[in-house]
Length: 564
Image (tube, rainbow, N blue to C red; front, top):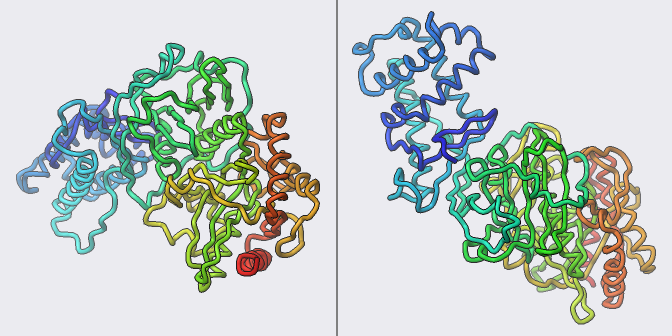
């Protein structure tokens, strides 16, 4: 990225290598600040005609931006009596302008980037220190100018994040990709991330629509990105290496991956990736597609540039779809569900795996179990909270995870649950329907090791049965899981009773021919190893307020852990 400041709709990206202000004077004298003021005046023309007319005062918008910046520079060092400006004739309007400029900046999803070892703007500082200093400069500048115009000190100070929501250090990476992927060669990689949590983001879309479809041609042929506008988040998804390339307009989704997927190291990225995702490709196709490059043995996903893909579910689910397709190819069965190891205070330990599509009640059942067994449970170790795998070694089925975090629908959790880890969480549209939170859940070392499965249940949110039910007939259990029936709650485009093959539209649905024999093999081994296989009735498809059914199911889960 060459610009010192990139503004586009609700995204603001500061390039600290191009410009970095250590003081209010440096900031007010920078091209970055001048660019912000010009953009704000353009916004006033559309959204605040009265304030726009005050700013122009019979001059052009560009001239007004220059005069405003000059005035603010003077106010930062001089007293009010030493400054002459027509804008001071109406101090109330000037205060309104400054307040709205500050709000305009804060309304953006704000990020800073530092090119590691490149440029000299902040070569002596770490990117975390640089971003923290920038936050302090913004806040101090706003306060000092506001207080000077008011002619008094504030009596209450709120230490909000005035600078950025997150910062990333980037690097150039040498990979083993062939010349076929030359277009990706110089796109910088994220080396480190700093997230200011709790982070509040407001993407303009809060629902995922459509499905991910197979394509015959390699999407790299229609890739439009370049190193000035694209970045790469190198992720470890389960045991696989994924290069997630993204357009800078979707930087909020990309940095949010820091709470979901382990960031791969520079040494790990020198190898060939298993998965490549092109997120925000300006191909004008409005598609979400994937392709298997057999020659290179790599899965490629492509999500077309669109406002709707601001919803985090797109970047998350495309990445997991690629993972699932690759793992099925290796003989592992993807599971859309939740898996935890519960250790009681008396020493008993059980691996609990719940399977089901979005809204079925997988995570909610675990949370209800956590609350119900608070006085009996010593530890809950999360293996996965959305997507994992089952594979068979020497006739024994084991579970592994994919994510170090969880992307959870707030509406389905008990009121206090989202706040337990809010100091580390990212909230998306918390005031809207289908509000979500991304929170860290477990360490990468945990998700990437084998875990014993003691109970495997399908999460049924549409049946009025109660508790948990063991299914002795393996064919019945397979049929229930393959039907993937649920009451859809509007988290995608579906509402009402729906069915999805194996409750997993992220790989298994698209490649049922590969998934079918894997299901047979895994279920045979589950039954051969006397794993409890059955259903858990969550009742979440009936009423979000009535959680009695969920409590009964959680109670029976706890009894299983205590007594089996």
